[in-house]
Image (cartoon, rainbow, N blue to C red):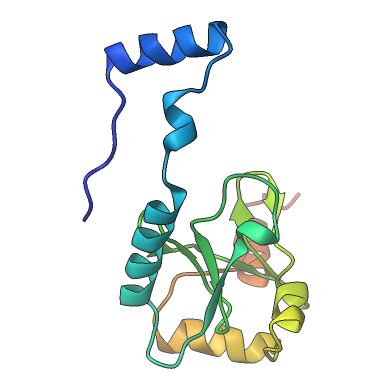
Length: 148
């Protein structure tokens, strides 16, 4: 795992001074390509041999250039190196990425992948990736209600 780049108190003071005096800041020289390469290496270790992926930073607003959607319907966090847990509904798949909605069918269509919900759910079952099923969730909620 790569070492993180931390900013010291002296660098913070210099950045504040540069911003106040309208000069170029230290962060203007930050190399995002290095971060993307480490994300890509981490994702390459996690994906299966025939699994394709695309970075979702282009599809949702915000700093999500480290998130990846695969053709098996899973989303991988390139910073932490784990798969996110989706919610399956009868007609779609939902991912909770902060307050953003990830339009999975649109991304699949743009990358010419087949969007088959049953296949995606089967891949999650076969590989033992965690997920939530809305129907199971509703059944469990009903069981705890008192009947009058």
